[in-house]
Amino acid sequence: MARRLAPWFAVRQRDLPWRRERTPYRIWLAEILLQQTRSAQAAGYYERFLERFPTVQELAGAPRQEVLRAWEGLGYYARARQLHAAARLIVARHAGEIPATLAGLRALPGIGPYTAAAIGSLAFGLPAAVVDGNVVRVLARLFCLTALPETAADRRRYQDLAQDLLPRREPGRHNEALMELGATVCTPRNPRCPVCPLRAACGAYARQATADFPRRRRRPVVPHMEVGAALVVDSRGRLLIAQRAEQDLLGGMWEFPGGKQEPGETMAACIRRELLEELGIEIEAGPVFCHVDHAFTHFTMRLHAHWARRVRGRPRMLDCAGFAWVPRKRLVDYPMGKADAVIRAQLAPLTPWPPAWEGLS
Image 1 (cartoon, rainbow, N blue to C red):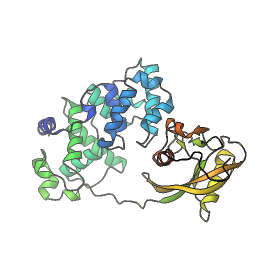
Image 2: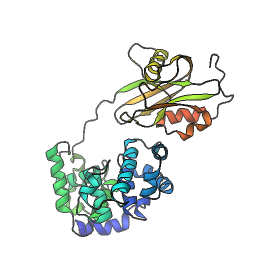
Image 3: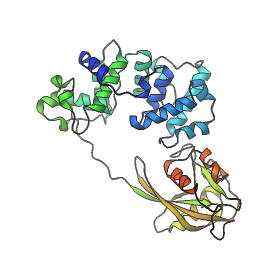
Image 4: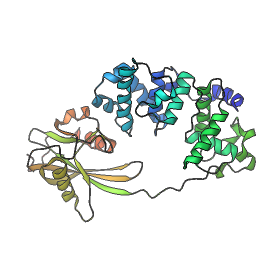
């Protein structure tokens, strides 16, 4: 298997930015970026992130807000927070050197068994097999395994199998080749079996039954929610934004304050309630500014942004990590999730400013 994969990978591998210059820091950054993100999307972020934070020392010394700003739009922001925390640990406890053992890598925030194996094998030549979704699909078809790694026993089965197949020489390159095969040839639908270097050993190909391995997971019904957001503008044209709590979805990011609409509640009432609960201010919700549809991994939402004015009270941190009154042109300095960033972009060209909605104060 290794003898067939290596020459195929040498010729057929995609030209990806993290394959051009390899250092432990660059490999680590790429692996964190590639968690739950497609290669095509991660590539641009990788290059921009390296331009801003070329070393682990510069990443460790940067304010967290700056790291989140560089990550904005990529999603799964816990990755950025953990990357930053890990960089600080590496500088403080390891003299700026990324640990070269699996145990040392696992001790860093944001690094689990898979990521430790990927970094360890690619950066340090450690004999650790990686098992991601692409590798699972390749192994399932090679050995006609129907079960997905959803239980501890099945996860161990795939891990042991991958480890048994790992060559002693260049284990990182083998891991990368196997993942590349799954990503580009042994795809979920319409695999390119005629050009696969492993087709002669593939049980599913021999049976002409690649679609049967592994069995497909039933897609759950994705819930939907309606969410309100307040565009509170003061007489100086500043907008009120709030920072999400660290432990929440999009933790550490900034947003136009608001929240989920409850059953039987109008959107205006929803926004009034959320601002009172979150910031302790009474507001009047005015006209709709825009709607934004957005899909997360486990739910979809429609975000309704309404103009609003403060009626009573001063903002306080009741159910948020912070708040700020920000001039419109300075909003870009505050990292936001995709939906709020869409609102921010639509606000940018508005004239006149402040908006001519009567009652703004």
